[in-house]
Length: 325
Image 1 (tube, rainbow, N blue to C red):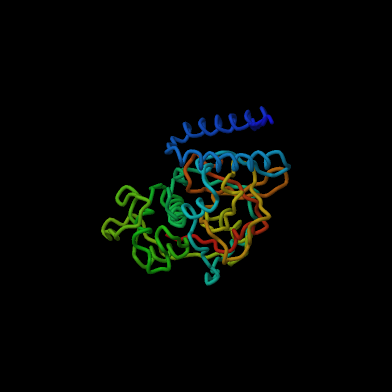
Image 2 (cartoon, helix red, strand yellow):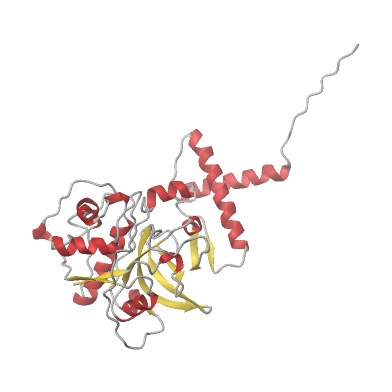
């Protein structure tokens, strides 16, 4: 009796093979662009994550949305990894912040951009893999407030806040809030310059030198919780304003346009990222904030993003503040 052995070899469809080749080509191009290097095992893990992120981005951009997504320096990371490295490790509950903002009681300008009004906003900075966004929101605001008051724009030290502000319920690379950081600067009697106390993205021993303080804070103004019109009043008539909001997975891929989300919450207990409102405007009938981020100038719109205004989007009106110098 003759026995026949049949061997079946499964060959991937040509289209699937082409897609995998195309995905790897995109990944390798992205690696070169962002100076990424991996060992063999990590390469395939990151390729898979990158491919899934790109699929999410492409699907979003095929739809009808007010903002587009794009590849960026975070495209080889899961949102869990991204959240652990770049956001406040625990949501910061700013419900204890009491509003003390006095309205200008004047008409609001339709739009404003402090970057265009003078030399009032420092270049976009990069917090690196440290959950210190709260320090960049703080310095960004204080830099602008000081420049508007004195005519001198001087980059200030995030590292001093990372190393020294723990007694004000801040946690270095694990989070904090600008309002609490302003309080630290007020009671501590000063903040040094970035040049004198440079950023390392690692929490270290406090090296503050009072005699080298570059700026003092006379008072801290807290916007009434959830009162977005007070934010408009403050930015339109006074200066840029620090605020915190909740970042969810789609924001990680933001490229341009007016960001809006149905995934995020709008309460004080969910905010996990602090940024700086440097202006506001309107696009295609959608009002927005112009916001300075701290993920470098290659992210978003040269380091900035637009987010829908007037709806407390992602809790952005939950805990806004600015200092008086």
